[in-house]
Structure formats: C-alpha cells, structure tokens
Image (cartoon, rainbow, N blue to C red; front, top):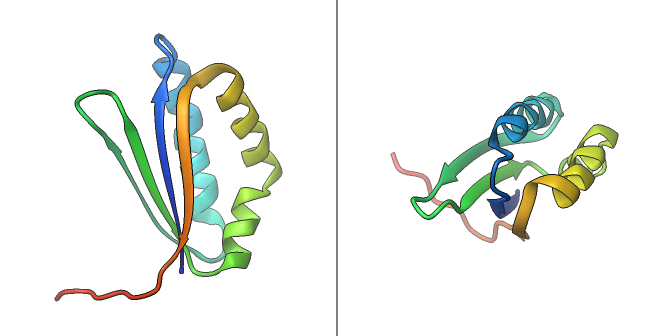
Length: 98
C-alpha cells in the first residue's frame, strides 16, 4: 500500500474557490482503480492534512499523473497554497483492530 500525506496551508481568502476543487479531486481519486481511502483534517491553527491511500505504486502513479490532477496541482502552487509538504510512504506493517 502507498500512503500520501499532504500537509498544507491555504493563502488567505481562497477557501471558497478551493473547496469545490478539493471535492472534485477527491471524487476523481476515489474513481480510480486502486484507490483505498482518503481522510482530510484541519487543525485549529489552519494546517490541513490529507491522508490518501492507494493499493499499489501503479495506482498511486495513475493518480499523481492524471491530467486533471496535474492541472489542479499547478493551480494549487500558483493560487491556493501558502505552503505544503508532500510525503509518499510505503506501508511496512499494518495492524487493524477489531
């Protein structure tokens, strides 16, 4: 499994425009083969964290390289994000309860 952790901070005043695009990107990711799950969190200090899981490197690469996602990534750098940090991780071990 491949897990992407995307931490970001938005520029002031972009939330109304950013929200629908973020929803569209979630719907797009969820429609791709190999998508497992996604969760988004917003901290009290405004930091956003998205955790996105894909079943394989190939499934993750299909998401990363999807043309619509690429366009929105560029838009994010140009207009929406004040800062971000992206980490792509491979799960070495997993335990699930119950």
